[in-house]
Length: 444
Image 1 (cartoon, rainbow, N blue to C red):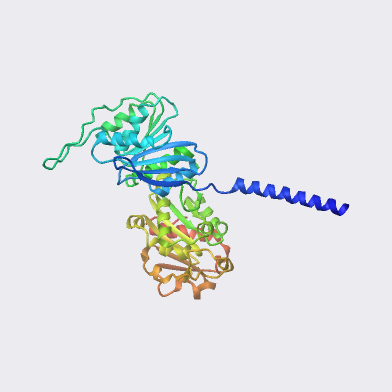
Image 2 (tube, rainbow, N blue to C red):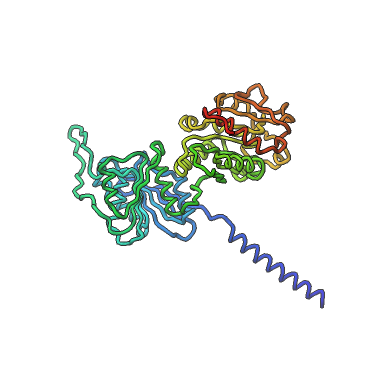
């Protein structure tokens, strides 16, 4: 009888544990991805439709141009993170009447009223027109690159027998009685457009650096509106922010070792931040848990750079990597666009090996170098003036810093893979190396 009672108790306990475990899994599992579809409107205008896998919390309509549009990746990230139903329509060129008709047709594909409307260029004007028609004080419009020149058609250049575009006979609304309007630019707006925005009591403005792409501005402003200050940017790369106590125009993007953001990289980043050098850590363990190509990582790093140019006003970047992060860094830098490479002042490689992998392997945690490819060929292509390669004396024989293909400055420190754990001194060396490459006085 007692044995039977124990069996019943154990069975009941197992059921309870199963229920609890299931609940924890349901609570902590990542949100499922959104679905995306490309289609054409009746007039041929391309439209992207995105639906979240979760309950829809908001509906967004975007009007853009073929040259300046949000990517599928950005749309999917917004939809997933904000549980947003989204449509993005590409407006036809140089015909404001047709643009208005196209946008109205696109709104019908939203399956309900839009709560947020954003636009770039001529789409910025359409966003304002939409807001002026709203009766809900919660309506939100984001106009990126707003200019009064988009209100009517530009003077047409016509071929023989070609009909001119229709004239926009609907004047631009002078006020929007409800809702909120954000006008954002990546350069100083023209005076008439700026004056128009300043006259609106429910408007605010934002001006980013002149070379930040307008789609990036729209993406950032949308995410800020929907997700707030702590938004991660919808980036495909897991990051840890280590801000400095004082403003700086330079940020170090620091790729961790294969154990993740937890040891040398974390401590050194903290020491750098205390000395006024902000760091954004990249958790290699999570990022490279599945294979990434160098090209994929370079694209993600570009997104990361654009994000912090917008969020923190960053002008210059330092690329740093420890162990695994150092091994992959040369190949990543070599695949960045020239403009992004020109924003990088230094490439810091700590415990750089002669082979590297773009996927985490368990044996890497035991101190074995990756076996995917040698690093020397990529290292040899780096600009020598930017490279600062640090190795421990115990690893001198096998270090990528001492290989015949190595370029730049190599520095030997006591110890092995962790440099005898003298992390404050290491942070000071890195800051001195950064200052040297930026032409600044060495940190005291």
